[in-house]
Image (tube, rainbow, N blue to C red; front, side):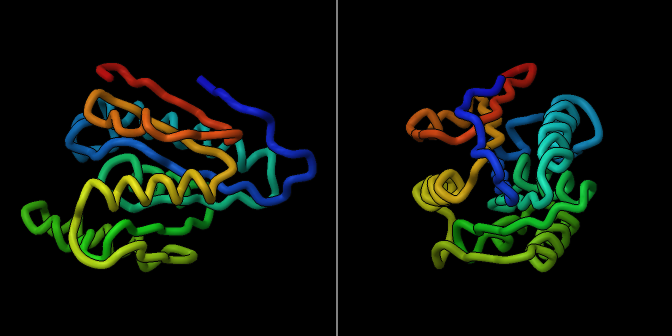
Length: 172
């Protein structure tokens, strides 16, 4: 579902942001099948639509586990540069109970980002993630929003005149 006002005529650079849930609430960490695969295909197809229409597309992501990193995979597959808005400086370090490959992937995604912005120091808090999402909304022209039962705080966001692609996957 797309709710929007049209993008301005003559726009040459389109900033596309991803906002959505972590991997534990969308079927695990495997992007190749099930609900997670369904979501990845939607993200990639939506992003590809903009790549086909505009000369310069830039991705905006918080690099969290789940749809944020699925978005990075889609950006990489389509040759789209992305900007990382990391909500707190210790983000990758809090995943010490997960397989080492998750941390390695995160470090690589962070290193490969066209630009990096650490939004706050320290450890996780819901407020820091909320503020990161507000920043993504502010910076983006287009938002890919993947809501679910767990991820309900976004109902508090106002998307304003942004183009918003909302995908309600099976089970949400």
